[in-house]
Amino acid sequence: MSTKPLAGIRVLDLTRVLAGPFCTMVLADLGADVVKVERPDGGDDARQYGPFLPSGESGYFASVNRGKKSIVLDLKDSDDRETFLALVDRADVLVENFRPGTMERLGFASDVLRARNPRLVYASATGFGRSGPDAGKAAYDVIVQARSGLMSLTGHDAEEPARVGSSISDILAGLYTATGVCAALRERERTGAGCDLDLAMLDCSVSVLENAVARFALSGEPPVPLGTRHPSISPFQAFRAADGRLVIAAGNDQLWRVLCRALGDESLADDPLLATNRDRCANATHLEARVNARLAERPVAEWLTILEQARIPASSINDMSHVLADPQLAARGMWHPLVDRDGHELLTAGTPFRIDGEKPALQPRWPRLGEHTAEVCDAWLVPARGMAGPAATTRGAVESSAAPTASRS
Image (cartoon, rainbow, N blue to C red; front, side, top):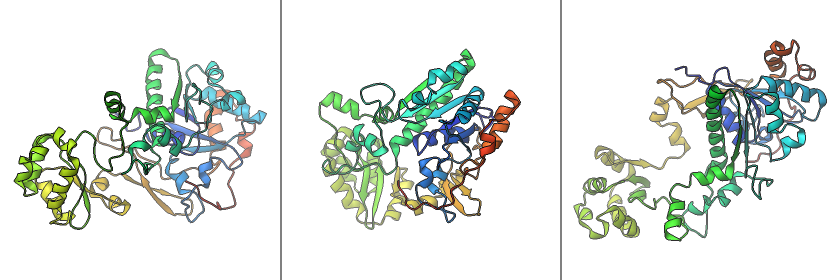
């Protein structure tokens, strides 16, 4: 199999900030030709979000827009609208994450565009979806984490809920949208027709609540934050050693007995309060106290060696300095350097895809605003109608001369 399974697929990317751009970055990593359509007056809002490179360009924007091309179109301008519609005629996929109703007001609703191009896969990623009483509301990741129930499960105390440390609701929406696009393209091979995809951040976040829904449905009690503990498996959490914390996951009764031997305390295995996984979950505080008492005798590094020899899953709790030095990630090629036009390098996470033992080759650049306007119009439109877009070929690249004055995340 080619490491670029989406090679030849043309994607019009009308997305901005995170959920949509993450989706289209995944598609670009898999070989799609992704053209980012941006407004002329500054483009994607994320271009103004920090951290910033010495050139003044946004590292935030760069990290989720690698391998794409940027064109500038004013979708309220008659000539640019004509160019946009001509691009739609040649596209396989269109992805947008405007608030519901925006594309309709512009005259570019899914049914309108798919009437022009019946093979078009139209994908919409919004906060709450296109239906329901809250369809028109704006959403940000922290709002969706709270509303979905995810935040109520995160942290150490129900009185002090915590946001997951990355914008996971945005990322989930991006991944689900990319998955939907790939499935729709596969179905198009069978039917010849595209389709309309309606993804909501809220739906995506609820879909990954794991067993929280089942626990509430069966007990009638809302699950609460448990820190690092798992509600149904024990031990499966962080413990304290002599010089810091480590995580141990002994996910069944056999592993528990092996762990007791590795800790040098056979009496743990004979403790009737800890005999089975159900017992250990019911007596989690007792388990934690007994295990911590043994772990306090040695530093984290020594315990990790002992536990590895015993084949007990365990890990230190790494910060980013340790993650970037992790030999496993290096062996998997998970770091991808981006380089700006001044030669400044920005290290980013690469793609997790490995296909037939190879990872897709990733581009080292992200697009400047409008950088590819003429190129895209020539490549997409000239074969179709013998001429480039009336406005797009003359507008050219648009680059801000002023560095951002503030960063938002």
